[in-house]
Length: 428
Image (cartoon, rainbow, N blue to C red):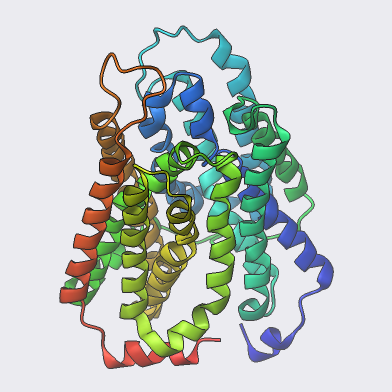
């Protein structure tokens, strides 16, 4: 992009359209990804939680294949976005219609109809995360200034979704009709996408290999010890992260908050704040310290949850939820910046794709499964009175210790170069 292009002003109508797209994009995800556990446990599907939280990471691994091999080569991005959201709406709309007819004796495995319907939705939804960003960036002439404004509407959409589920539905997040809200938002964005500005396929006429799509060319970066330490620690730290999405809402409810899903939106409010102040910290701290703060924030979050478990200490729970802004922004956003600086321009996009694949994909899949086994291990014993809570202290203690171990490994083995420490001073 030339300097004359970057100096152009993006039309206000396009900014509004793209911001609306981002609002709905993350409203869809926020309307079920946290609230769903409320309904799962009320309906007797609590033991499906690990599989439910496996579908999005699995789809995140498969999404680059669809984008790189099909969507980015043959079809306008806004049309693919529309079709995918309309298909995703159909899967979500089917859940309240299908589930009342499912035999309770149906094995609670990955092949349960609920998990398969959610997987269908996730396979449609996860590619749209990259597509929506691609559409926005294509039409913004000054992305450094305008894209953060557009993107923050996505976080606001997630917040509004949580508040809507918690306050508009009878029964709040225990209602099965939360899936129809998701379906309605998906359908709305599906239709709206066809009216977005034309966005031609970015790889039209180009040959792309599966390895390039998956970012496997970026494996060459692992020869450098620092980058290897960064990638391995990034993957491992996402294992305890999966537990937050799967069980934090239930723990907040256990801690006697009247509306658990609405309380969880405090984390997104925190995310907005820390996103805005990140440049200030970058200038003073550099990459390594920013990543360490993000890692130790996860240790603090789970430690607070564990310590508050026995006495329902609400202020500890609230701080733990509010730490989400530091946990997410200081680690993932800083990590993306580090990947950008550490990668040659020729494989920079692939390196970013590989980073997403190993964190949001592989790390979260492992975390969902291991956390499912952890919660089963500390579930109420057989024959316990109804309403007996699980052993929340140990459920949160182990991820706190695991995150602490990974942070210490990163502290000891990652050596920040002088240019990496000083580079953030130029951040806008």
